[in-house]
Structures are given as C-alpha cells and as structure tokens.
Image (cartoon, rainbow, N blue to C red; front, side, top):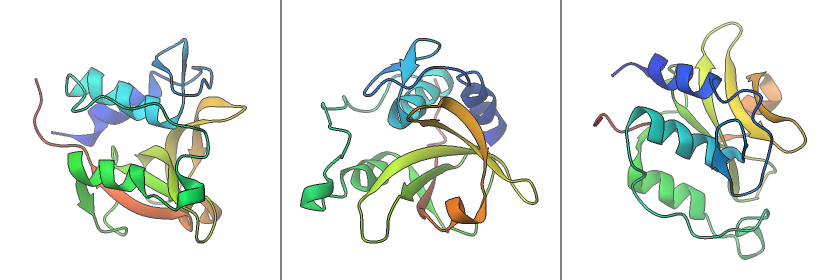
Length: 146
C-alpha cells in the first residue's frame, strides 16, 4: 500500500476547522480526529473506540496514552525512515507527554505534514527544524485494507 493514499486523504481534510474531540471532514476535527478520519477513509472502521479526553491529554499524570494507542494499532518506524503517509507523534515540550499528531505529506527538501492545529484547523505545514525536533515517534498505518 502506498503512503500517497493517506496523503491524498489527509489533504482532503485541509480547511476543516479545529474542534476538540471531533472527527468529521469539513465540519471539525482535532489532530487525533484527523488521523482517525484518514484511517476510516483509507483502511476502514477504526480499531477501537476513543474515550473522551481533555485538551491536556494525560499531561499532569505523565501518561503516554497516545503513544500506547499508536503502538497498539500502527507499526513503529525509525525516526529517520521517513515516507509520505507516516504518522508523526510530537512532544510539544521537553519532558511533556507526546500529544500532537500529524501525517507526513512530503519528504526531503520541502518536507511537510498535515495536522489539525488549534486556531488554524487542518493545514499543511513545513516540517521545519522546530517541528522535527519535537517528533517523539514515527508510525506507519497497518497494511490491511477493506
């Protein structure tokens, strides 16, 4: 399966407003909702129901809930093994839990990723050095498709 299917699906969400806990293309989503929506469009039904979550995730407790869920359902890759369609999990501050997701759209010079960002909605951003420094893990979607 090519990562370009995931990139095309993610780019179809660009312009969707940011809405916490939502996952409806064109109506609203957050970063997890974007990845969930791309999963549904390309692979099929989501692998598990997502429980309600706060905007701080489990930060006060230091709980890596998003990392654990990613490890359950996707294939972890080396940070340097970048490919279009990879899921990027970001740690927004040193020592904080990893709680932001994006989908790599382009690699190499001009690398970019699609993500839902508070105040901006779904956008494609350059994967600049400040963003690259925050990548805590890289994943590939499972190979199975409906």
